[in-house]
Length: 142
Ligand SMILES: Nc1ncnc2c1ncn2[C@@H]1O[C@H](COP(=O)(O)OP(=O)(O)O)[C@@H](O)[C@H]1O
Ligand SMILES: [Mg+2]
Image (tube, rainbow, N blue to C red; front, side, top):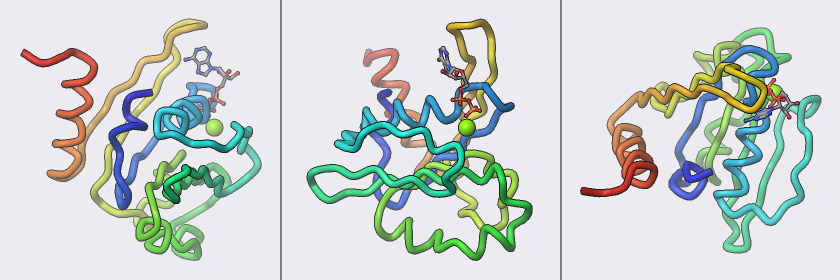
């Protein structure tokens, strides 16, 4: 996934969508594009999953599905994760006020067996730039 190659340390991606819409699968694709050397795991019962890269960078995958409210989110060291690396959050709605306001928000929906729909919404200037870079890579330059 091209997004993986473009996100930078300190940046956040939100992944929303119903159960089964493909969020966890997309994180695995992002981690691959990002350059993870770790084996892909199925983190559905793990709260935080870390991916590593040879240059020392870390990609955190936080699955907030089982978290009830932002207080539980605040118990996690989200600032610490962002100071060390990149953060991708599934079910951000569950802990929204514990998360940074600025992020690339992705909403997924099931379209057909092999097809998922993605809507990308930048929240904040840095993420408008990130989305512009993604567009450039996907649709090419002029
Ligand atoms: N783009 C895709 N094409 C085909 N199957 C997919 C795709 N994305 C996800 N799936 C399948 O859909 C199921 C649910 O995906 P998952 O990523 O766990 O969803 P979520 O994390 O949103 O609940 C899995 O069996 C997965 O293999
Ligand atoms: Mg999931």
